[in-house]
Image (cartoon, rainbow, N blue to C red; front, side, top):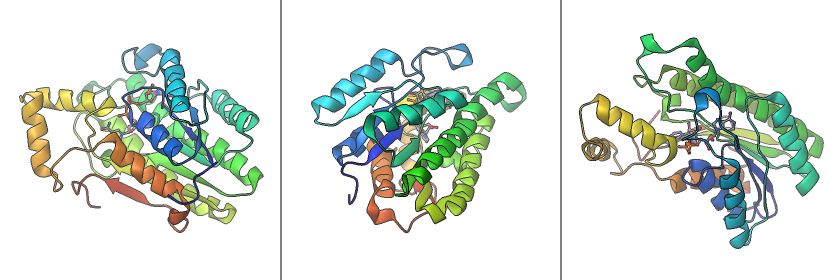
Length: 276
Ligand SMILES: NC(=O)c1ccc[n+]([C@@H]2O[C@H](COP(=O)([O-])OP(=O)(O)OC[C@H]3O[C@@H](n4cnc5c(N)ncnc54)[C@H](O)[C@@H]3O)[C@@H](O)[C@H]2O)c1
């Protein structure tokens, strides 16, 4: 990919070894980017402990990236907290001297239940992480990129759920549709500064939060996980579920010079399952 060597990239929610964020970090680092591993660090409240990138995992990610020859640092950040996000960008610039790429990947999609049972707190936490978090990170990144005067790339990890509805995931689907609206509006406003804003819309990936969704839907439809995954393969024209590396490749392209004329796009990475 052209133009990525030496660029500085933040990938939010990238502290979990199995998550899409880790794959994005590794791909950007392999393309020569200097990268910031950032995640919640300390899980709490409704976000639970079993699906959150913890501080030790973030450090392990830095060690792995450094072993592969990359420059990396870890900075904990709760994307719901405006002060945390401001500090994330400030510390990144203090360490690396610039910010070129912001990947809004932090997300919550595992609070699944029938719409009439969703509590206001559950609705709010999903919207806060997935949409308000992307707003705060986009705003701070844009302010820094404008100051830097060399443009930049903002990439929102949305979802197939940004294009279609899914049962038992109303808050998630609403937040991801909102992310595409945020992408389109900010793409128009930030274009004059040479900043492109795009979204990537993966279908079900069988790692990270996708694994939880797949297990839940298998149970909901009375299928074993294997049966559910087989039916998924059948309806995906390219015949397999997504891999974290598929999303990472799309991010690398959108971050590269080759994508300099692409903005406001919500790119499906779904093996042909989602086409609009
Ligand atoms: N896995 C899939 O099938 C799939 C498909 C489409 C889109 N996505 C999107 O990709 C992104 C990554 O998903 P994943 O599958 O790797 O799931 P994941 O659960 O492994 O990753 C999400 C990360 O976000 C972090 N996070 C949660 N709340 C946070 C907060 N308040 N502040 C900072 N970080 C926070 C978590 O700790 C976790 O590391 C999400 O935005 C998700 O919606 C995933």
